[in-house]
Image (tube, rainbow, N blue to C red; front, side, top):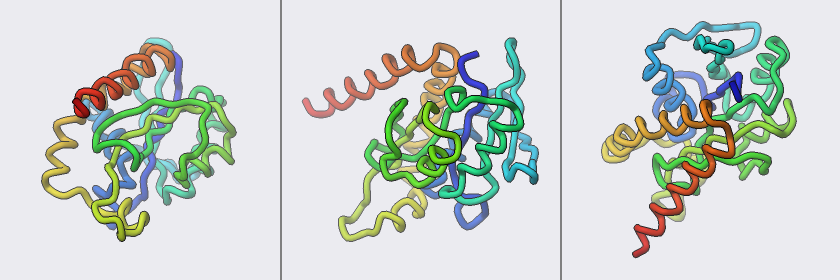
Length: 201
């Protein structure tokens, strides 16, 4: 198994449900459900919700923070320390404003791209983890603040698009888990380039 932990980033609480900044929560919930799992166990000592998915070569841990996105590093570090997991064995699912809604890009050894949750994780566990970036689309209005944008909810049309793309998003994540970073990047990232090129023609 290439990876041992998948982290879905988001803000915990009803106030933030279905917001763009909670894309990590949305994806990891959908991924777990696709595998037949829906019950999360709250680990208060590590400030996370955790789910163990049995694998032939060990359990895969799915986690969601029980705090805020920009404080994700502490909970992730606690999980990695307790289970003796290296940063290279961690996948972070995060929202990305530079990608079209529902598009996926997989990256490694890159900066934070302005994402405070990724920044906090980088500071707490160091480099090496994989970014599974899922598009939330750009601001609808130029004058709209970035914070207002990422904390806004998807409208009905966007919700339908996301629901349609979610099976592919989950398949991309499973591909990364099964095949590793290089194979997944070649397949997933290349598909985005082809799609963008087609749209420009």
